[in-house]
Length: 281
Length: 349
Ligand SMILES: Nc1ncnc2c1ncn2[C@@H]1O[C@H](COP(=O)(O)OP(=O)(O)OP(=O)(O)O)[C@@H](O)[C@H]1O
Ligand SMILES: [Mg+2]
Image (cartoon, rainbow over all chains, first blue to last red; front, side, top):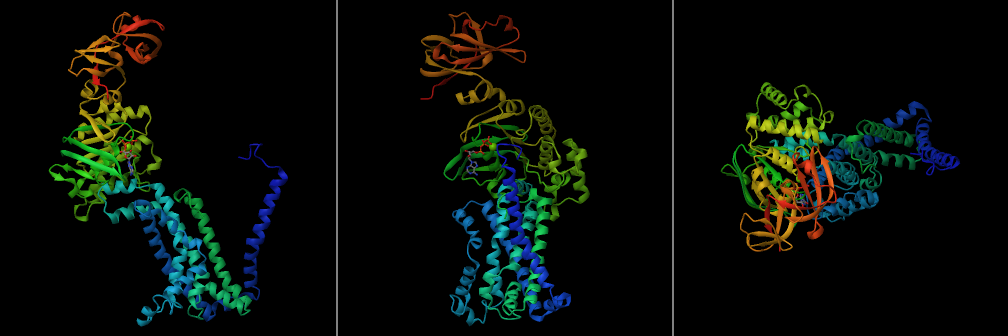
């Protein structure tokens, strides 16, 4: 492409731009990553293991895994259902719905958290109703799950919608006319066609579900050993000046991020053709 | 199985794609749905298959109203325009799909499925390719897989949407003969969509000509070619010229001069004379339609003249067969054109 001399920038400009990007990436991405790893190991392996084996941290790990284990399957199902409805049916309000799917990306997570407090908190709309039945949503697991589900809803749906729209209904119609029932059709035709995009969406959804801070912070109440997820635990440790411990816990989230990146790159390289072409993040 | 379509209507958000289609398809027939783009061919085919809901009228499969049948009960073998093969399944599994999708108690044993799929693949000449994935096949091969897949469910009717549309000319002609062969061997009632009149005329027992969601004419290839009921059908089926003039007292007049004796009765008034290119005879300039030869073209052993008529400066094509070619008038010559066969339609008012 750069063969066209009319479009080629002067060499010095090209080099300057590349240097700028390298420096920016180094300062903004690589350096913090290195800091996390170095700082977390600053007091040696034993301190690192001890920090993570601490009861409150272990509780935070368990809670984070639990929240992700509930949220990700839920959003996989919601995402498939939403993509199915939006690409397979014609109905009034479809465009509005398509626009609304991105709302969780557009809104500040803190606002999302506040909305749930407003709805389910003690003073909230459903507060009295919940209190009568002894159900606690806010400052408890249900609230954290709700907030996380809301925040991570778009990942799977956004990955599937362009793909399913591009694939059209042909194969499904073929299956139906060959006598396949809805269940067979879904598992033998639809799922194989969307599986890599689904996995991609699930991967991103999971990374965000484990890393979400803002919305969860509002609904969690920061009860030690009970409603603190990993990101909240990092903040607490940091606020208490336990920097080594904070970085140790943070390193777990960093490893998760790196793992996600590697898997994502593998999916893109190996199955790029089976992923949606638009809507890539 | 006989299939009857009675005053079928289909709307797409206010736009009528089919209005009042009446058609009966006899068991074992090979029918072509022919029409220009957007005339409703695919929509009619999909309505027959039950893939789109209909808004009026009914479709009968034998004596049963298709509305009461599930897709599985209709047992329609549908071949999609772009094949719609299952990309992730190999050729064998694509063909086996319909059999495997049957409810457990009707599902054949694995060995029987294998035997039937193998027989079908041999029939469509794909015996050695059972293990290939669809994107490892050529267009013609995909088409044959799609056909085998549709035949695997022992369909009550085979519906094919532009089965040869995406193939190159030579493969088209081969596959078209071969489809006729398969049809004659299996006896399946078959409806296929095409916008290629040659394909329809060569292949079908009967041709259904569609235009803007209505049926213009149903008939054998010979009938629609020789006795088109409307100038649309004449124009769509094959080449030819439509010449404006007047019908009066059994004669067709152009600029007041009789050029053709009418064979059917048509009221006096403005009319169109439709003539195929090989139905003109070259005459002396004072006979028939007056014109001047503009161009001579040789095409596959046939000579075609472009003759510009005096009336309306219209250019008509005239085919001369090999015998006449020695007598072909030179470019620039003034000649008369005598129609020897033609159809006269009332001009649209
Ligand atoms: N899903 C749809 N929504 C709205 N309009 C449609 C839909 N499907 C078809 N139509 C319209 O109905 C008319 C008939 O379409 P159809 O696909 O049956 O035409 P066709 O004869 O198969 O044309 P082609 O030769 O181009 O395939 C067209 O005007 C088309 O725009
Ligand atoms: Mg069509």
